[in-house]
Length: 157
Figure 1 (cartoon, rainbow, N blue to C red):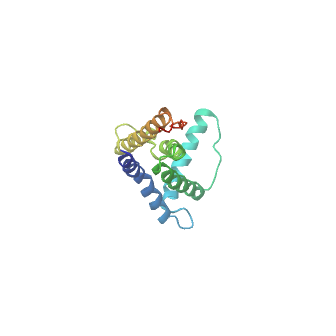
Figure 2 (cartoon, helix red, strand yellow; figure 1 turned 45 degrees about the vertical axis):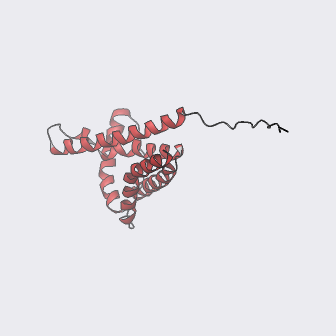
Figure 3 (cartoon, rainbow, N blue to C red; figure 1 turned 120 degrees about the vertical axis):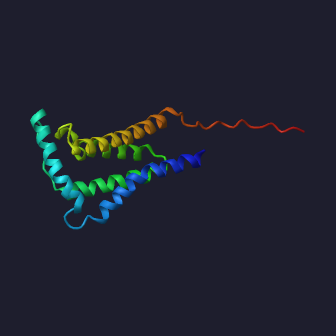
C-alpha cells in the first residue's frame, strides 16, 4: 500500500514539477514568458486589491516572483513525494498565491470565452488545492507510531 501511495504522490506532483521545469527552461534573463504573462495580471490584481481593501501591494520584479515560484514548486514537490507535510504546505502556499492572480475570471463578463476558460482553470486549481488540504488533513489525523517498550522475555529452562 505504501508503494501505491508513493506512486499517487508522484503522479500528483507531476503537474507542479512539469510546470516548474517549463518555467525554468524559458526563464532567460528577464523571467521568460511566465514573467511576461504574470506582469499584467499582477498589476490588475494589485489594483483590484488596493481599490477593494485600501492595502497597497508592494512592487517587485516579476522575474524574482517567477524564480520564487519555480523554487517553491520544485522544493515542495520533492518533499511531497516523500510524504512530507512541509512539501504539501509549500505547494498549498503556491496555489493560494498564484491561482487568483493567474486565473482572473472575475475581470471578465460571464458570457465571454475568456471567462469560461479562466473559470475552468481556476476550478481545476481549486481541485488541486482541495487535494493538498485533504493530504494535510489525513497526514495530521493519523496518529504517529509510538515506540513500544519491549518487555524482556523470560528465558524458559
